[in-house]
Amino acid sequence: MGQPADRASRGAVEPELPPGQRLQRGWPVTHYGPVPKFRPERWEFRVFGATADGDKHCWSHEEFSALPYATVVGDLHCVTKFSMLGAEWGGVTARTLLEIAPPAPEATHVMVWAEYGFSSNLRMADFMDERTIFATHKGGELLTAEHGFPLRLVVPHLYAWKGPKWVRGVEYMTADRRGFWEERGYHNVGDPWTEQRYSYQEEPGDGPEL
Image (cartoon, rainbow, N blue to C red):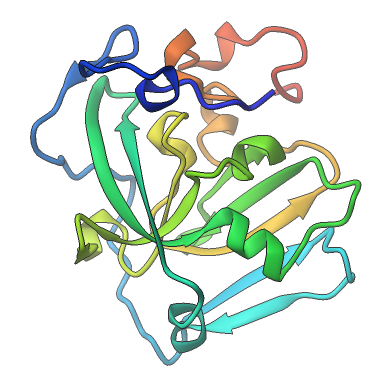
C-alpha cells in the first residue's frame, strides 16, 4: 500500500506520463483562494494529534529552516492534466520529520494543514515515502509565494493536490478523514497512474464515506 508508481520508481529511461496527462515545460500557478502574506515572526509549524509522546511539537520559521536539508527528484502531476517531470525539490523530507516527531504506533494517516484552514489527507505509507518532502526550494531556488513559499508538501507519486502549498502543520491520525478537496469530490487516494481523480471512482476501502 502506498508504494510510489511514477516514472522514477518504474525505471523508465524516456519520460513517462500517467494516463490522461500532458507534458508541461513551465510551471503554471494553480491554487484556490488568495496567496497568504508570509510573516516570519508569526509563522509556526506544528506536529500534533497521535504523536508517540502525546505532545505537540512546534518550530518557528528559523527553527524549521535549521532542520536537515535534503533534495529529491520527483514529478508533479496536476489533476488539471499537466505533468512536470524530473524536478529537483529541496527541503525537509517527511521521513526526517517522522524521526524527530514520531507518530504513535496506531497512527494510520496524516492530515496536512495549510493556511486558511486548507487540508489534505494522506495514508501514512504515502507520507513515509522516501521522496515525500516539505519543499522550500525547487531547482536550487527558493519557492515563490505563488508556488507555496515558505513551505509546500510535494508527494511525487500522487496528484499534486495531495501536496498543499503554504503548509503549517501535520496531524497524525488513527483513522482516515477527508481533507478540503477530498470533501468536495476529489478522490481520497489520488494515484495518477490509475487516474484516481474523483470520488465517484473510489472502490470500497479507498476512503471514508462522503
